[in-house]
Structure formats: structure tokens, C-alpha cells
Length: 227
Image (cartoon, rainbow, N blue to C red; front, side, top):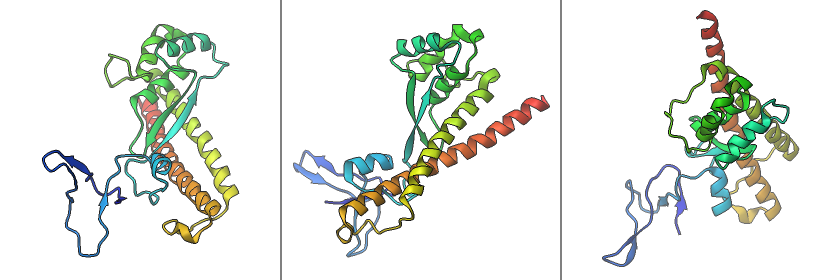
């Protein structure tokens, strides 16, 4: 009976002593003001699928987008890399979450594996293990010799996803409807607006990730030339 807000961290809880549901606010509310709770740290996609709404763009610090990555079949070591991935429960195509704040080690490990040359074949297994989060190696997994290629691989994947979002948003046209009053909209228009809102927020994350890593890549190349 309470709406979600990304700005609060309070939840409904069950109190055994009173055998009732208890809610304690994290701030003072004025009479007549709407009281919010948190539905959990979920992405906009999860909130849409589970609860039927999308927070305003940039309002959800837990928002993320799944970035698909795939090995290239033209890779000289395609079979060896695929075998290493399958050994650790992964497939040739994987999706990893990206947030405004960055991406997980597993995603970077997959990128390392995707661009690693035949000379690194003995390391395919440990890199695949890191990509599956089943590795016992240090968390600061790095392969400086192929880091530039790995970053470019991720940037290319971001660009591919951004292109798909752009095509959808362009086909959808300009929409800025008030989805807080769904009764005033027909169902088809209402759902379309939610889809546009979700795609806009996820595309924003990809743009941000691309921007940050592009600058990091340029710095990496500059530093390499200097050294």
C-alpha cells in the first residue's frame, strides 16, 4: 500500500512480539505528505517487470543495464575459449550488468578472454574462471598487454547496444507523457511510454560507461606512449 522511492532505505518488517507489520520512517513527514518505502535496490528493468513503473531518469542509483558480450567465431582460439567458458558454466554469449558507477570484474575478465591471443592459451582457464566469479585469484585481475584491446572490445559492445536503443527510440518518436496518471492514457500508449522511459535510462548508462572508459582508454594509450 506504499509507493517506492529510490531516496529512502526503509522497508516493511514483521514484528514477532506484536505479530504485526511494522514500518519505521527514516525521516520526518508532514501531515498529508505521501510516505514512501523501498522495494529494494533494483534496476529500472526489475522495477518495471515486478511493479509496473519506471523511476524518473537518473533517479535510481541502483539502475543497471545488461551488456551482451560474445566471442567471435573467427577467433583462432574460439574452440579453446569456448571450452574454458563451458568448464565454468558460461557460454559463448554472456550478459553482465553495467551501472553508472562501473562494471563488475567478471565483465572485464570476459573481455580479456575475448581478445587474448593464442600465446595466452595457458591462461584461458583462469580468465574464464574469473568471468564466472569462481576464481580464487586476486580481485585486481589485470593483463596490461591486452588491456587496451579489452577496453576497446567493451566499448564496441556498448556502441552496438546503444545503436539498438537509438533505433527503438527513433521509431517511437517523441514521448513525454505523465505515467503517474495511467487512467488518463490508453493501455497501449501507457506501456509504450514505460518502454521509452526504460530504454532512455538504460541507454544513458551505456553512454556514461562508454564516455568514462573511452577517456580511460585514451589516457592508457597516452601513458603507454610516454613510457
